Amino acid sequence: MDQAKPLPRISPDNQAFWAGCKRHELVLPFCTACGKPHLPPGPVCPFCLGDTLEWRRASGHGVVSSWTVVHQPWFPAFKADLPYNVVQVELAEGPRLTANLVGAPNAVLRVGLPVEVVFDDVTPDVTLPRFRPLTP
Amino acid sequence: MVLDIRDQAAIVGIGVSEFGRNLPASQLMLGAVAFKAALADAGLTRDAVDGLSIHLGWPLGVDYDRVADAFGLEIRYVNQAWLHGRFVTQSLQHAALAVATGMADVVACVTAISFTRVRDFLGGPGDHEGTREEGGTHGEAPVYGLTGPASGAALAMQRYMARYGATSAQLAAVPIAIRKHALMNPNAVMKKPLSLADHQAARWVVEPLRLFDCCPVTDGAAVVLVTSMARARDLKQPPVAITSMQGIRAGREEFIFAPPRLGINQQPTGQVTPRPADLEVFRKAGLSPQDIAGFYTYDAFSPLVLFALERFGHCAAGEAATWVQNGRIELGGALPVNTSGGLLSEVHIGGWNSICEIARQLRGQAGARQVADARHLQWGTCWGDSIIFSKA
Image 1 (cartoon, rainbow over the protein chains, first blue to last red):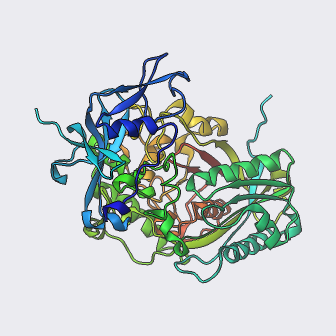
Image 2 (image 1 turned 90 degrees about the vertical axis):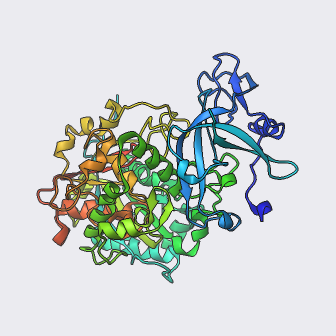
Image 3 (image 1 turned 120 degrees about the vertical axis):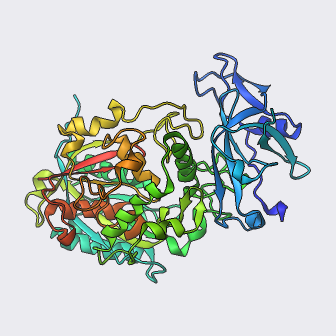
């Protein structure tokens, strides 16, 4: 069942992100000219159009900036998970990443919830980042 | 020198097909019905049409050349947008620019949709848009099971609610008002009254959107004929002037279904609505929001109506959920919205049903739905694009 869930589409621009996840490291493309990181991974820095991006490890911490709970059985492969959550997390470094919250019921979801990244090896080749509530 | 487009182009004909679900007719057939109805409405023959601005094609339908071929047209100007609600405004704007600059005499804006035949593409494994290499435009994350356009509106409304304290019960005022309008329109797909209790009892689709916050999946077609004002004055119907226009916005402050700077995807967070750039369409028309007798907007999901009202200064940022209460956006209220039933209750043909309704209203042909003293009506979307139409 799990194999039927969609997997990330690896492109030349995002390959390093997913390679980082495979190593259980959350990495972001930082611009060597202006210093800013961005998501989703693009070909150049969207802030200064700089050409040189350097992948650096992020803290893995952030806060939920928006969330939803899906009730519509859109994907057959997700049917057993209904209702399941999806979160947008504003990383401590600034960019936002869409993933889901694990290790807590949907009832804890709120904008501003502090979270940290965890990694889930969903196939031998692919690891997905997910988030769990940050325990103080 | 900048071309002054003000009142230089006009809508002179409108036509629609039957609206419904699981209609047996092909998309081209629905389009042909609407096209012939628009010609009859305008008192034109098809030979007069030398421009096409089409809003269909991938992932549904055909391209401009097949439309010209199927309807037997000789075309010298084409604009084509793929089937996405975002492209209604630009399709009309291209038509207006083409007739104002003489690239065409009469442009037919054509949309024809058979959503019920290929509904898989609106979410799930068949959602080719949402599973593109760079992903969809609505915040889709198929890896985590987030798919379809509703997801983007849900993410935006959730953050909007957290920020401003808006509630699902307040949001209900939008689909309830628009349903009331649909009940006055025999061509509308949705036929039953909608109460607050119905709205609140309905199932979640993708929180915080309930069933009635999402428009139904439907079939239908519309054709809108645009020509120069000089020519329009000699035609059968009172011309509906295209008074002013502003284009769709894009950039890091924008997310398809959120106000600027709400903080969805990579939007920075900050309160900026409305900015002077959002109100350009009023300045060009020499009008203010108070001059607008009715507001028409893309309402595939009810939050989008709130966002559009704020974006064009009809109310302040964060105020829309309370502002829309007590009949304010209903016929007879201060600013009626989507008076034929919008996407939420008339039909989802991108919004062309509302463009046709604007024309009916400004001609004084809206019957029981007629907005009193309608001189200027606004089409304006959560994407920031807009056209102000006037009684010529």
